[in-house]
Image (cartoon, rainbow, N blue to C red):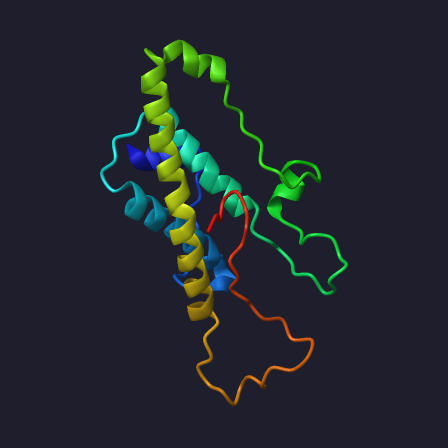
Length: 172
């Protein structure tokens, strides 16, 4: 039955070699980062469909704001991100939330305030964890196995610097 459906829909399975960036292993890395963040932060939290959708939209926005390139000089514009392509040059996430629908479904003002506070707590925590995990994963992925293979750093080399970023998603 499954084989018939797969044949009818012309589904082709493409396996990805685990931990291989040259075979799209970086997708697996991103999926793992999102899953670990969700699991650690949400745990057994009870969320409505809309709340879970909101959190996943925030995660999507953060991933789409991750730089694809780096700045060669200080006077260059901000690095290119996937959001530039998704929003035609605007590097700000958009939110398709209609608050009228939320207000119609809410029973009381106190309930709305309580849920908003809870959502803000849930939304703030994942980014701290994700940032730390992402930097650790980058360091692990690019760790030097054989020092003779890699020359010492020199002026002009690209490096990853950990900073406390003031951003909506990475508040300190």
